[in-house]
Length: 230
Image (tube, rainbow, N blue to C red; front, side, top):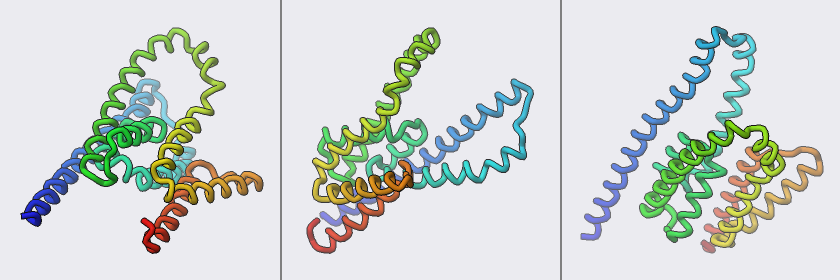
């Protein structure tokens, strides 16, 4: 009986994931087409076209950089965002500064188990609500921005460099409190790497440090698991 129930649940979850992937791929392609239409329609309206030699020369570097960043984010964020949540996040944007914090906060409030169906549902709902609220706020915010653009930009400019560090700082405290055994040592190692590279004027940047943090965390977690401490 238990085996039949487990098989049925596993089959249902697989069907759900396949459905999410199919819908997610469809809307991802739709989003890509709409995004590409923006510059094309601008060129048509302005009756001008880019310098194709410069465009082709810059394309490998731009595509390569975005591919690396996208690959790293997809790998690192997938366990936290879930199937549906990941598609929603990458289509609507603002993953690291909005969707990811919202998802983690919802998981902590609901006290979901990592990798569970409950986590998948809670995360997807939280990201969907976040996307709707963000869109409404942007619509409402465009009105004063159109009227007082220069004043608003001048007020927000001094604090803008601190927004992302503040968000990730809050996430770091929450995650370290929940997974102290796993997170503490990798965090210390990453801080040491940052200090050394900055002292040598070899700042690795956010993207590279995410990759370094993933490797360090993976190796350290594997060591703990092999020693039976997880």
